[in-house]
Amino acid sequence: MYLTKCAVCATELGLSSGKKCGRCSTRYCGAACQEQHWREGGHDKLCKKIKKAGGAEQYNANMKYVEAVTVAAEACAEDTKGQTCFICTQALHWKTKEGLVRGCSCRGTAGFAHVSCLVEQAKILFAEAEENNLGPKVKHERFKRWEKCSLCEQEYHGVVRCALGWACWKTYVGRPKTDPARRQAMSALGNGLYASGHYADALSMQEAELSRMRRLGLPEQHLLIAQGNLAITYQMLGRFEEANRIKRDVYSGFLKLKGEEDHYTIRAANNYAWGLYELERFEEVKTLLRKTIPAARRVFGESHNLTLRMRWSYARALYHDDDATLDDVRESVTTLEETERTARRVLGGAHPDVVGIEDSLRKARAMLCAGEGDTGSAVRALRELVAAMPPPGSSA
Ligand SMILES: [Zn+2]
Ligand SMILES: [Zn+2]
Ligand SMILES: [Zn+2]
Ligand SMILES: [Zn+2]
Image 1 (cartoon, rainbow, N blue to C red):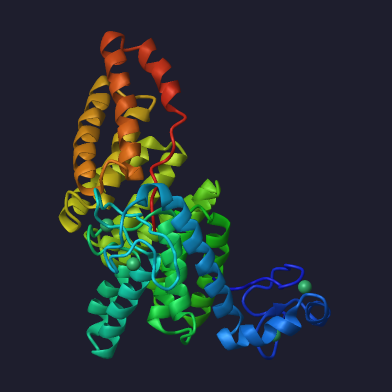
Image 2 (cartoon, rainbow, N blue to C red):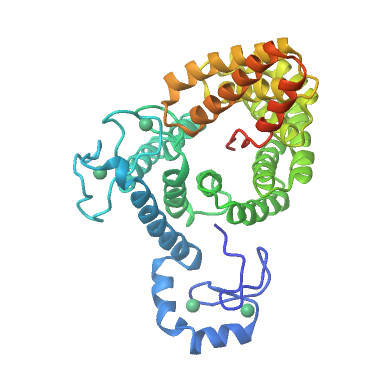
C-alpha cells in the first residue's frame, strides 16, 4: 500500500508532495516533522534498518504482512485445531512458528496450510513462468495462485486473502513501477484489504493507484478495472451514488471495448447490478441481469461464483420489488433453490455466499407461503422483514 501520509503528523501527501528521508524514503510533510522524527521519534535508530529492508514502502509491507499472518492464524485457530499443512505436512511452521489457516472452499481435512507455505508456492510458480518466459497468459494464470487455492480452485476470502495480499505486495513492491507483477500485486492487496473489511485503506490505495495510472496514460482497459475496484470500495463505505455512477461508466466502457460476451463486461455488469440493488432500483437490476446472466453462463459456466452471485442478485431483486407478483416470488424461490444447490456443491456450506443465499431463500420461501395464503397484506408485512438483509458480497 502506498504510504501517502506524513510519518509524524499523518498529513495526507498524495503520491508526490512533501519530503522524503534521503536514506530510507520515509515521507514527511516538511523539514519540521522530519527533524522531530529523527530526534524524538526514534528515526535515528530505525533509519538504517528501514533502508536495509529496502526502503519505507518495503519495510511497511513487511511489517503489515507479519501482522496480517498473525491475525489470520488467530482467526483460523479454532477451525485448524489438530490439522497439518498440506504443503509442509507440519502443524507449526518450522521457521516462523506460525499456525495454520484455511480461507477457501476446501472441506474436511483438506486445504489447511501456513500462509508462509502458500506464499512460497505462489512465488515459485510465478518465478518459474518468468524465468522460462512463458508468455503473458500463463503468467497471468500463475499469478492467480496469490488469490486462489490450488486444491479447490476458489478464491481465498477474509483475513487469509488479506495476509496473502500483503505477502504478494511485499514480494513485488521493490520492482519498477511499470512492472506488470507489481501492478497485479497492488490489485491483489486491494482485494485482500477489501475482503477483510479494511475499506478505508483499500480506498486510499486505489485512488492513488488510479491517479498514477492516468498520469502514465495506461490503456483504457487498465483504467476501467481500477475504476471498477474503486467503485466497489465506495459502495462498502456507504457512498452509493458515487459508486453507482462509476459502475455504470465502467460497464458501458467495457461493453464498448469488449462486447457483451466478455468476462470483464460481465464482471462490470454484476457490480453495476449490485449497486442498483442497493439503491433499490430493482426494475433496472432485473433488466440488466436478464441480459447478462445468459452471457455469464456461456462465458464462465453454471458453477462459477460470478454466475451464482448474479443469479442470487436477480432472485433477490425479484422478490424485493414492491410490484412483485406471486409468479415473481415463485421464480425467485426456484432460482435460489438451484443457486443454493450449486453454490453448496462448489463452495461448501461454510462459505459466506452460501450462507447468504440460504438466508435469501428462507425469506423468499416465507414470502411465498404467506403470499399463497393472502396475496395482499401478508406479502407486504414480510417485505418489511426482508428489507434489512445484507447485500450480496462482490469482489473485484
Ligand atoms: Zn508532518
Ligand atoms: Zn530515514
Ligand atoms: Zn506449511
Ligand atoms: Zn481450497
